[in-house]
Amino acid sequence: MDSLMAFNERVPTRSTGTRRTAALALGPVLAMAAGLVTGPATPAAAGAAGCAVRPPHPAGEPPARQRPAGDDDGRSGHRCPAGPAGPAGPSGAVDTAFAATTTTPEAKYVGVAQGDGGALVRDPTSVAPNPHWHDLSLLPGYPGGAVGISLSPTPLNGTARLAVTVRSVTGQVAQTHCTLAPNVVWPGNCTAFTDLTPPL
Image (cartoon, rainbow, N blue to C red; front, side):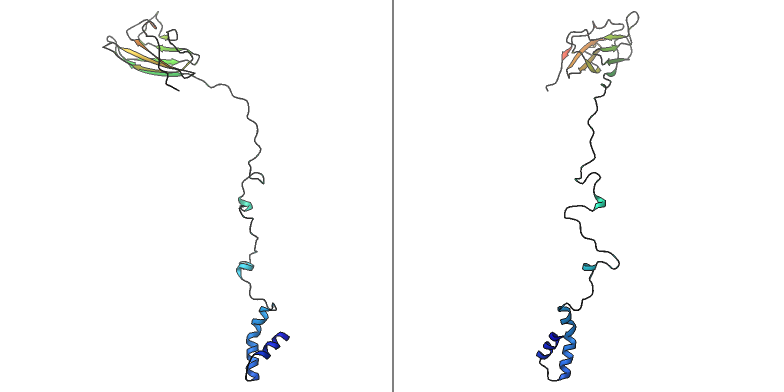
């Protein structure tokens, strides 16, 4: 109050009434400046009406309910060591092709890479005692360990032929051509395998 009265004495006024009016008008302002009266709370200081003001999280840290599962470092759970390797999966392949000879209608030939290293071709024109299935692994140049096979008719100068291409487990590719005729004797009707392995 002493400060207020001192201020009132310094206000140049012509009458006591005017001096009192100035003191009343400036009193609340000076009181607020002196900390005697507190102004209305603002949303920034007190938050929305009825809501508690929560401190912000540290910079760069997501809210607790959005943190990933795991420990405080954000790492995933404990990782177990890898188990033993499982057994090798099945290997081998099969392919078919239709081909006709000059004396027989079109027939389906079947090629099988057995997965044990052998390669067989089934000739539907073979008759007993000639078996239907014929082993090509005895031909010169056979790569061994065939796990893939492909059959393709390749007639040449009117002669029916069948190209047999195999791929080994080591990636070697080789091909033979077999002449087709009714009840032909396999594998004597086939050429030696030619290496067609692509460059690595």
